[in-house]
Length: 373
Image (cartoon, rainbow, N blue to C red; front, side, top):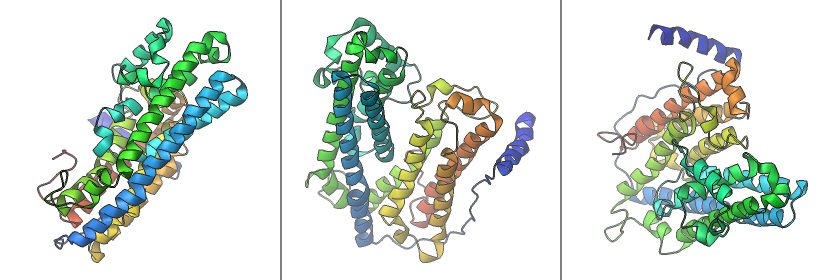
């Protein structure tokens, strides 16, 4: 404990040296919130669905379809140009998925769709083992998106495709011995595109998820009233913020006194770790604003949303300055201090959303999103 306490001033000194002040926004003394206005809540839900969720899945679908086409073109004519195009399409798909993946409710949690797109964290390395086995055995059943669908979810998503494009022996993709590897990669891209289409269609269907999320009521199979719907929406934000800290960062780094596992970081091979994390944070901020959730907060307490903005913006800015090589970042004191900064402020972001915003709209008394209640 004493050693840990001694490190805190050192961390703060490094943060100040880097121009990174901990994003401490002014606390707000919360007054008892007024009753929720059902009409206002429905308006917020409609904006969340039509302004963030549906466009997010549509964008993911477009990116995934482009990725599938780029992978097929690369396999048909391997070259530096087609390789770069495939990798650019992969990065774009990671970005679009990182934006919408904070929505971990609804159609995405049905039929293992989330895991089929991204199996992470993978603490036991099951995905890598499966991918390596498929590549070693040259199992033709994984070279079509339809048959791949029935295989291990750990080896049919973005993590598996990243290994195909960037992992051991990826250079084989440029010659004949890499033919199977490339076709497997194209099948993965096709599988991701198929899941993306399912998600987009599910949310765009007039009587599907969008109706359930925008028209709560006694006959609604998901939300019986506006409060239940709002609880789910705030839950997206809180659990999204939790996932950034607990799954996206703490999976490989929990602090200066803990063991570091840079090669378990998400997208570490492609150098997209921090871009993905920044996109996650930006998504939380965008959903909050796109849905006009500030309108639910009493006017004298709206500085809470300003505090959330301040923290999110600072985290996004710092994430964009961290070395894309995760191993190097964790071995360098100044770079590692930036990761510590994300951990510190990630915890504050969760608190601001769960306790302060939730309390301001009357959803925190006896209720904890952080506990999943």
